[in-house]
Length: 492
Image 1 (cartoon, helix red, strand yellow):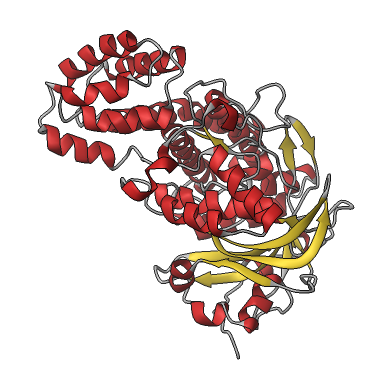
Image 2 (image 1 turned 120 degrees about the vertical axis):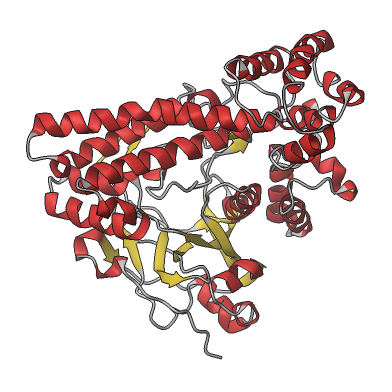
């Protein structure tokens, strides 16, 4: 059976120093775990054929589709503040690009498909747990409405990978608007390859930011647009309690998508100092630090672009500084606009940031669950009879009462009625997030018992995060003390 991938591969047409050509390594006994049928159709692929034995051969890397041009992309990166001049795709192979039904160019990549020239003595494989985690979290992020890479398929390899212990191997088929990262620009800058920088910048402008090409200073306009996209993305992470966990420059997409779901997590009780990554011992990538780290990463990008911004170094630095100075304002606007929506405020008043900030402070002091607090506020917005469910989340319910009196006074200035406000808030305050204890239980069931039913059920629940789903109400509940997960792991 011939399975047609309508590839049109532009990145593989760039010079050879942008990547290494490499074939996926075959596996012994591939078995399909999950196929994202809706995404397959969006990519103009046949889900029935993809789930056939021939399709599984393609999704496992045992066969390369016609017109594919498999490559491992080169990039560098700052990892926890330390610069590594060559990283690259050490366990991922880009098969090619397709144009989806909306006319958007999308990468199709195999992750865990064997070693590449960038593997740095690694095996290039992926364990089942991290593959399921990325599939689940990236699809949950998409359902929540945030820019993200997507998961097309997860396949068991029938082989064992050795980490701390032997684990079942798997391959993830990842889809992205591209896999170019801030670290990709750093790769060429570290080599003082100005021609490579220009080719890369022109490529990214053409693919992601075509309006920048119309500017009289296209590279300045490009930097402005990347900064705006990152500011908006990070603000939206904060609105749903998401902690990326490893915001190295090689994990930051130039297209403004969430990428690389390693030691990421969603908060339960609100605390801006929350860290889950087992390797982030200093709290560098804590929830509340993400905007600051985002600006630091964008500063690294701006440094790489200096030769393109102006031949006059002083002028180039001034242009880059001006662009970076706009980040804080763009982030604050996006962040506070999102908080107003979460609180049911459609109009803008000067005191709104303080009102939202005081709620977050009270939540932190009272260990209130982030997601449940805002979801239950959606019901309280319809009338005071909803207050009890919110105040029960606070150690000291009087802290909520004092804040709620101010909130209701502010709501009285809004034009919509209670029912309209409730509906609007429910559309931005999810009932369900990928709670860490549920994710870990799902992984444990799959890895230790070969039981994928928890994965499939959790995936179903998270595909409709803004609906109540009474049959699955227990998935909205925070963990009991003995269920709490305090660390997540990178999975490489």
